Image (tube, rainbow, N blue to C red; front, side, top):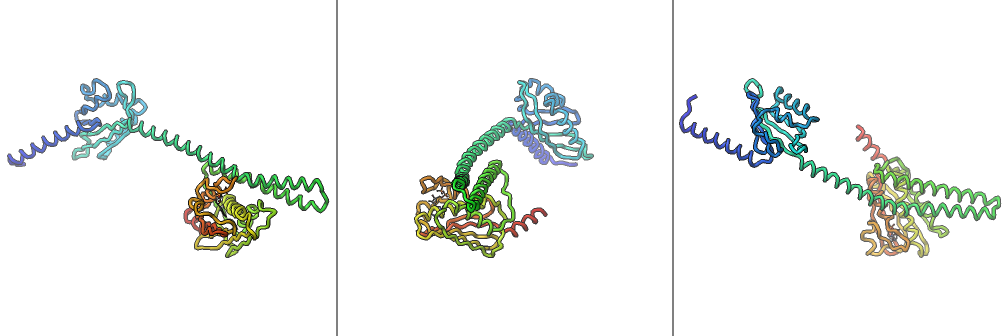
Length: 390
Ligand code: ADP
């Protein structure tokens, strides 16, 4: 090939440029750059190799020097990975391993090399960078520890909330059960044969409420162990009936009129029954408490289909809700009751959102309060399950 003087001058200049640039790169980087000539089996290392503390890093240009300092547990696999790359037709290779330092510690290395091959595909040279990940790993470890600690303390926090929830939710069924048992004792004291039905009803009430208390504990334990909500097909009318009768049990002996409509009557929802029942109980119980001084206390429960959801409204003709209470009413610790804990609505929101629904305060005019929430309809969820399974 004929080359003019000026051309060769340019080539020489660019070569010098290239060498200089590569020298500068070696100085600039914190990584150990190495250049292995496979034809002579000699390795040239950048000055960063000194950081491992081995005094012979420069005087011993053999591959054996590097191999000797690979951590014994990683040595065989690391050497094999490089050998495999040399004998393959790959153009690059990267391996992670521990490299022993002179002070006895190990550095965590990410070694990435580029392979130069001749026309026949034979590897003739490899240029790589030993990137020291030790500090990064330490930071990651610290981060993971902090994350674990954070998760642990938020778990403790959640368990504290759970404890309050437990106290709040168990109070009602256990009080009801105690009342039923007390009533049975009184009836027994003056037992006449036609009182046996009453005793039977009272004991049945006690049994139902004790079972419900157990159910609540189980569900809360499931929440603590972070298991998902288990959805099932539930008749909405039945759910409303059960929730209302438990929610109303504290209202006795006051007469509260309850009007219920479910349209269409066979609406079926895909939800966790005990949890949603708890929401209905909370809303009905709040309504009963708000109607303490109402002349004709009345609760209207109305459920209907809206798209793929059932929308349930629970309204009452009680006190209504003052503006300052209304804002943030679903956040914890808002209460106007002497013995209230202010977490019933916040729990209700958590439950409804976990089922895929929404809950809101539709209206709170004096003498009229209307809470609403939505629940996914059974048919739609079932179809979604089938699609997911496919
Ligand atoms: P708690 O019942 O323990 O106070 P909740 O979270 O269930 O906790 O309710 C928060 C507050 O919202 C109640 O203290 C009450 O002031 C108000 N509230 C809830 N429901 C009604 C209702 N139906 N009518 C009037 N006020 C209500």
